[in-house]
Length: 146
Image (cartoon, rainbow, N blue to C red; front, side):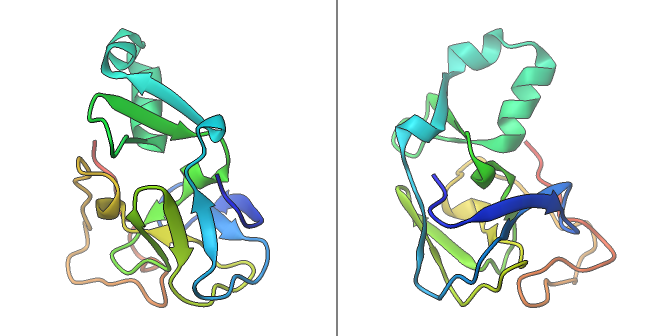
């Protein structure tokens, strides 16, 4: 569950992104695992879904850290957080996320999916390009492959 005010808007990284709606100081707890704000799906559920629903959950959800047979999908803006190799948040703990630096109002929140999704196999199609100040290069989105 997002613990700071955010909004969803188009992202230069990929599709939609989640943005700070207020200044967030470095070290702020910005997200906490809360089952009331998560949809939980078993692998059996996922297999029973029509392909377009399964793809939606795979895109906006993530594998449960404590149980490889479960998949979570956030019910708030957190599901729109995009991947970055140089994120401005820290999700190395499975139950919480923190701001790594001061995040200005209007700045996109990013996370490194590798910190919480053991199945993430993202790629950067324009080799050699790195994000600038936590933002994606203007000439190429980062792509999440499931």
